[in-house]
Length: 410
Image 1 (cartoon, rainbow, N blue to C red):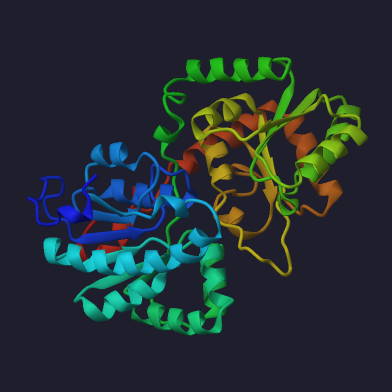
Image 2: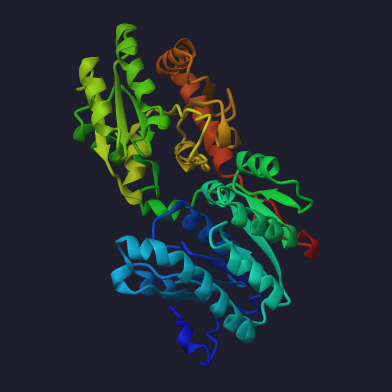
């Protein structure tokens, strides 16, 4: 990692002509959806980018292995937990990103800034006045909602969007939400996240490895190899709809399906979901795996036959459902998906192509989807193959610079 205090030192030959400064308060090796999204963006053009991000555990070793320069600002150790840190961190993010971006400009003379999220955007607004640069701002969902809840921030944010060269949304749903909140002439682009296989370690290297992982997970939960395994991955909160999947387990058993359900994740509804499984007498069929690190998730995806998440739409949301990476990951592993017909899911799951979309409030519709997929292996394989194909498609971030004559699609 190159520390900002070393700006007078000789530039390491990591980027021949870096002209894009990518700024994000969240960046790998810290596990976070936004950090993963920004890291993948940097890997697409390592010769063009410089990264400026907040420090995190393990960043020194991680940064030294990258193909592009990485700079970090840090927080005092006593801020890592407690209310002081939560209050002051946003201010530090704004000040540090502003000051260090200016210093990096005099070192690299970059032409563009890509701001990785809506958080801490006042720094970006100031930089657009202080530096002769153009900028793009990325939006993911909750970062937009946080801004809209404050009238002053909303006004400043609207000015920032008007000054932007372009806005990048991680899903069509976020784009639609943005257009509802603001009337903008600024070009808006949808660039979905993609799967980076390396995040799963060596567990996706071969089909034999995945078969071994499937057997291992099955043995952990005493699941017969012939059973149908349904998988969900996510925070155990009410609107994720885990209870709707559990409700269908006794029905599927009644219809002769030998089914097991694995839930990966932690959250406030865990005890409630366990109580539901006991009440329905399927507690030996519903398995709570708890938190599963990314490198171990490959085994769970390999072990399942169907991936299901029946997210519910909150009419008065206190959060915006972000891009559902878990649906994309399941598709990448060739698994058919059962999902709710709403939100960003529609960017990932195409009805009757790589999964089945349902109304999560229709018990009949949900059960029919489960019963159909559980009993039709050929359909599961067909949807899984198409899902794997769709999961490998991507729109490159360099499409933002298409006037430079670069090919944007792979």
